[in-house]
Amino acid sequence: MNNINLDNVDLEQLVLQENILSAVGLTSTHLQIGIKGDPSLRETAMDRCRYESEIDRLFNSVEPVFEDLLINRGLFRLFIGFNNNEIRTTSIFDPLREEIHDAASFVSTEYIDRHFPQIPYTEKTRVMRKLYDALIKSELYKFLPLHLQNLTTKRHENWEPMKESEVRKVLMTLKVLRNIPEYYLRNFSISTVQSVVRLQFNCDGTQIVHAKDFDTFIKENLP
Image (cartoon, rainbow, N blue to C red; front, top):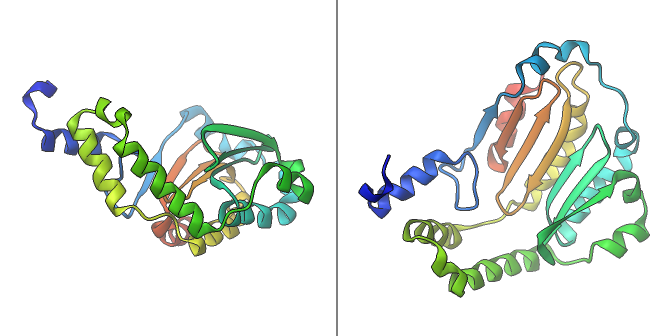
């Protein structure tokens, strides 16, 4: 399809249709999308038993830490690799860079205080709004074609972060998902900016779920 023949409204709709999840917005507030992975992994899922990783052994101790990081500190994106104990974080204080941590470090209060400054959730939300507002008013924004400018502006005007109660609800479910006998959770990520949860399971299937739709996802998929 030749973009020259499309007006800006058509281009906006095409971008929304083509993206599963992007920075310019979602096509629905009820997002629940499944992505199939490697067929060979799906076929052998029943033969690959879950072993207890270090993060499994520590989970009761670190789950409250994850909640604290997302609600009371600067993080807005968190990745948990259950099989390799890898924790990836992105902070409002340095939004262009991702940090990588070992899960065992998260049991140390001193470690958390050294790496993750505190900030109230309402203030973190206000900073996010200011960052996007500054971007829209910057010279950089002029490099975007008009249809992407329109999408970004609309998203910014209507944007709300994930609710604190939704963050807590999602994190409380992780241990259950990790303990599913055959199709257990392998890794997980959450973004409070985009209000989405990404779940990758042992069968290599990936689920991308909107925070508002997470209850429905759990009811439909938990055994």
